[in-house]
Image 1 (spheres, rainbow, N blue to C red):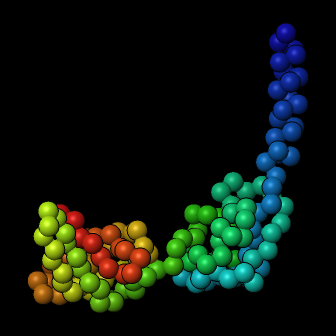
Image 2 (cartoon, rainbow, N blue to C red):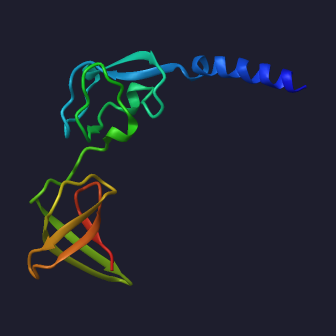
Image 3 (cartoon, rainbow, N blue to C red):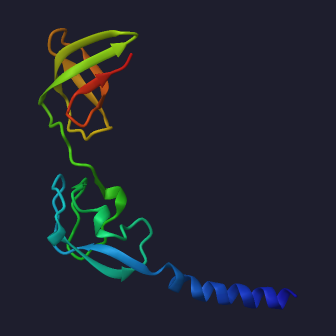
Length: 143
């Protein structure tokens, strides 16, 4: 019984590399950080990197968070939605709670994409607040 288990285990171990091989997305050119990825920047090849994008549709239109070098797989952790707020950009700050709605103007202290948290300096009070970025670039501040 033990010999049979060892044999079965060694057969499975030999097959795992074949099971894990799949198509992965490869960069055809070096993609600079903060660049939006276009269809011509990608190709599909057989590979086995865990965390790599398997479909170009997952990658096209996303922004590179780091430099992605030509011939290297595109990992999903290295891309994200394009930033809608740049550092030092003027942005509307909105605070809403229990029917109260306050709007102010602020200056972003970093780049940010929709759904990310960003620090913003309120221009009228000169205090720094944090908030969540909306798709239109508005920063919603919570208490």
